[in-house]
Image (cartoon, rainbow, N blue to C red; front, side, top):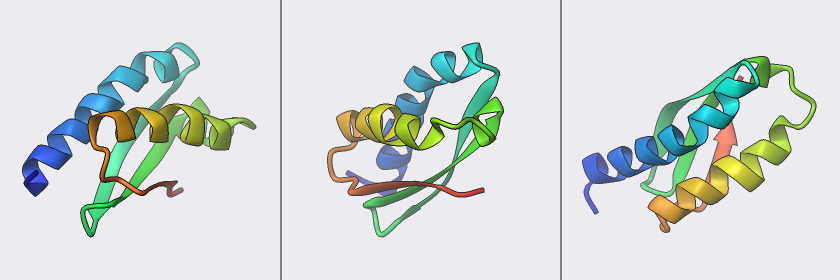
Length: 79
């Protein structure tokens, strides 16, 4: 998978997650992909101060990204 294809797949994953985050007043954006296996995202809006955003990151965001791009090893939220 090329870097462009990987980026598109991760964006597709974020599009799948986005409606759930939007419904709570939040959002998410892709910041970077490092070494084709480490993804950095940024929570926005209500998600930045939400007490369960780490659970959302692991159970929702990371799981969905890995469904679209199985080679991804880690997903990290950067403030």
